[in-house]
Image 1 (spheres, rainbow, N blue to C red):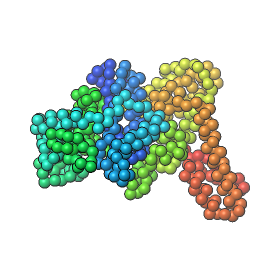
Image 2: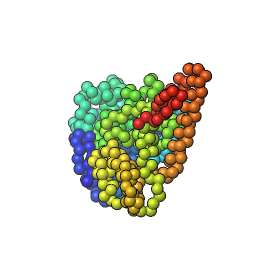
Image 3: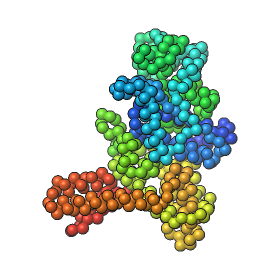
Image 4: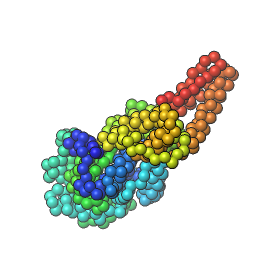
Length: 446
């Protein structure tokens, strides 16, 4: 039985889809104006695991994750680069796909793009105007929040918090300062489309509502994304007419206790992390905390994840065609069905690995190893050849050995600055060293 925490109501509920033969899930995807950072990767990985669980439980899942390819940030990036908005969107969409593939994230069934659904957005806006929820003003169309008394039910924010959190432009032509934009005018040099309100482009919030309705109907089973989207984006979607039975939100990713920001210079790009550790280690690290909780990323996080995977793959070195026993996988499956409790599921994988090592009976050992690999697949882990993984780890060990030797030579030459610099490089790799006389031992922090 699958249980999920529903942000609408703030409690764990049993998940029962409206159609037991067909589950529909929509996750807010990226605005493609830059490379994906680790915070962008977290919802992609989390909801990829949920998609795997749903596919195991139900006959059919339709999983949609959109691409926002028209946005003021894209326009700014295009202006800075001296290229078109289409060029920026295409470049960073391709980069996003490549980064997620390296993390083992499967492509969604549907990947709607905003620019392909302008007609749907215009029609939806016309419907909101006709229903008295929206009004045109100076080339804009705005949603009038007082027309929707339930506004704020998802986030629980009061009116003052709504105005501060929404970061909406307070303009004299708004009926209410909280009203948000559904359509805005474009200059001739900007992306735009003809509409009943003039040449312009959609506001961000209407995009997802229109794409959901176009591809998945009036009501979906699950709508998800990062906690930062709960307000105002998802709150605004609800006001526009989006209906979801479950609203799911993953927590923030911080870096060494601080919020990621360009001003702090601590934005961690996925592609930069991939130059340091395998994508599977990054995926493991992202699953190391419960999805609803914050995840603090430190220099040691990916190295510890790599070491943990080394231990799991160490139990898979013996090749076997033996079938797994379903009861061996129960602890992993139960953990994932309990509001996607990935830390408990990872702990269950490690218990399985210990059983593999501790079992003398070869047939039973093979069954446990098969269960470990199959259970890992529920989380998108342990899909590689164990010997290839071990060899890649050995290459890392050879690199560390070279650095340790270079440090020893620097110490012998009394080049303390060089020795300290190498020690710092090792620390950044998550390696601790211990000097004992003429000998130096090293280990990866876990």
